[in-house]
Length: 190
Image (cartoon, rainbow, N blue to C red; front, side):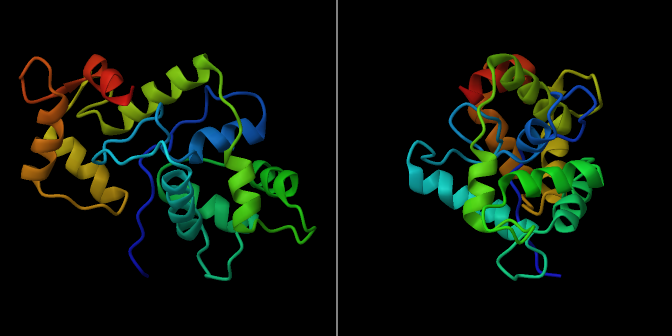
């Protein structure tokens, strides 16, 4: 299988997510925008081109059979592959709600519309906490180490050396302890 990179903003826990299946899906799959989490080196995501490019990468990741469409089953499998959970019903509801041509599949434009949903400040804060939790050294430890960053990026298909991960953390490490606290992570995401 071809190596594919998926935005690390995926949430791995949907138990405290909003009520709507569409909102849950957006939270799980939303690509990075200026105020959403990512530990990848900063890119100019303020342009529509950058956001569209990131969406295209996520879309391509989910389009397993490369037919230019995402089925509910593909959506569900890929969410599970990165540690998330999406029920069959929620996957089908998301696809049906965004499908504009009636084929029960998401083309790129359908997918783009699906991902453009707005999130409240409360949802954004929860997304940030969940994203931080994905990278934490140990659940509840309160920090991200270079080794835990390397492990998660590898899991997401973006392998980096330990040196690279240390440099990424050092860029935002305010107190110089070689770790990234939630506070430092939050400031980085602004």
